[in-house]
Length: 270
Image (cartoon, rainbow, N blue to C red; front, side, top):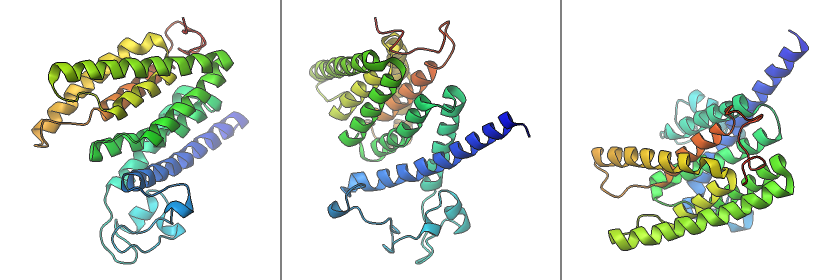
C-alpha cells in the first residue's frame, strides 16, 4: 500500500468513526431537546444516557453506535425491552452523509465544519417530523457553524456577508409567512421555519436561492402527499423539506459549474 493509499484509508476510517459519533450525538439531541433535557449542563438535567424503558444508565458498551444495537439484538441489556430501529437508522444515515461530505469536500477544514453541522441538521429533521418544532438552539448552532464555514472560505468578508444574508433571508421569510397567513387564514410558515431560512441564508450563496426555493416547494408537496396518504392529516411539518432542499443545494456548491472550487460567498457575494 502506497503512502497516498494509506493516508486515504486512514481518512475514510476517521470519517466513518466520526460519522457514527455524530449519529449517536444526533439521537441524543432528538430524544433530549423535545423533553427539555439539557444535553450540555449537568446541573440542568444533562445526565448519562439511559434506557427509555427502565431508566438504567447505559454503559460504554451499550452506546457504541449501530454495533451495540446489533449485538444486543435491538433490546436493552437490562430490561430486555425493544429499542427502536430509529436509532441505528439515524446513526447509519449520518455516516452516509459524512461520507458524502468527504467525497465532495475532501479531508479539510470546510468539510469538517459541514460534518460538524450534520448532527444538528439531522436532529432538526427528525424533531420536526415528530414534534412539529425546529428548536431555536439547533438553528442557532447551524447558523454559527455556517458563519465559521464562510469565514474559512472567504475570510472576514465572507463571514460578514453570510451574516447579512442570513438576516435578509430571515426577514424575507417572516414577511412571506405573514403574507401567507393573511391570505390563507392559517399559519403557513412557523417561526422555526423562518429561523431556518436565516440558517440557509448564512450557508448558501445568493445564486442558489432559486434552486433552494424550487426544491423546497417540490419536496414540500411530496411530503404533504405522503402525510395525507398515510392518514396523518392535512397539517404537515415543512422543516424536513427545507432541510433536504438545503442539503441538496449545499452539495451543489461543490459541483463544478465553471468556477474553480464550486460556489461560495467569496465568489458570488454580489
